[in-house]
Length: 100
Image 1: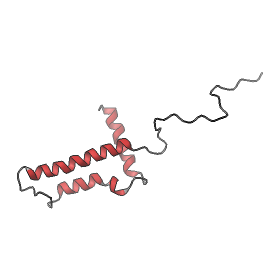
Image 2 (image 1 turned 90 degrees about the horizontal axis):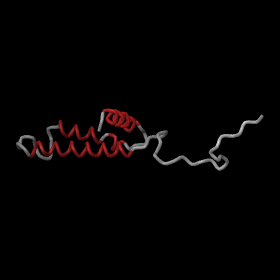
Image 3 (image 1 turned 90 degrees about the vertical axis):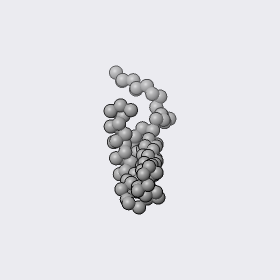
Image 4 (image 1 turned 180 degrees about the vertical axis):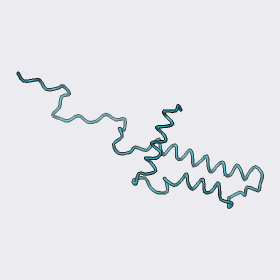
């Protein structure tokens, strides 16, 4: 992903987080993962040398994959969906002729 794609993804992410149509738990999934990472209460404590760290890493990576997939699938209102717009029945697609 280049810089332009990363910027577009960031803009889309902030639209996703602020959209009231998206359920609250989906918007907060990343925050829940960060809280789990920082919290001293884990499924596997961080005192266990490698497994405790892999536990935190797994939760963070799963949340990151979930958020990236959600933001990519997100279609805000007013953004083109990729499908062509329907043509009005009265329009032929050609401009009207000028009257002389």
